[in-house]
Image (cartoon, rainbow, N blue to C red):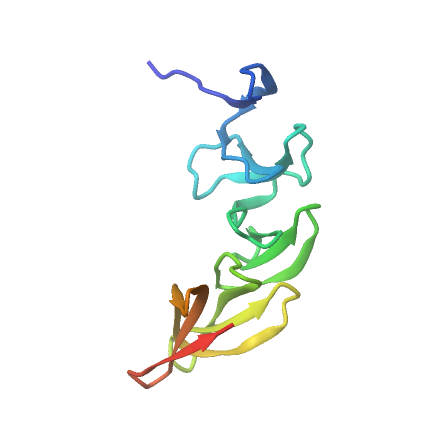
Length: 173
């Protein structure tokens, strides 16, 4: 016997602020969250972006949006027609077209993206900024990063591996 569960949101005083009508809810980051309707499987479900007043900023057209966590105001979205990823702003407008096979959250204004490279039969990685401008060409075998501290200053350092090489190169923002 299965139970139908719906999610909504309470305010800080414990009062219901947004009715329990959603099949899947996420945590708020600032004024925004992602909500899902008619969700059977999270991977195939459709989500919308909603503000804290319960106003949907988008229709339920995106596959598993993410990026609200430290996303520099951009949310990654997957186009269900092409399967490619891009980014929308907090008003729900796509500002970086869905043209990448994989994307990461933005950190300090930069995100790792990849496209399929038929020549190597693998993805090639690069870095873009919040305008979609290419900061590091999409030609690397791998890009990662970590928080590093130098002389008491902490910053995110990107590390890239060139195709065909075992050596990694450090790239500070």
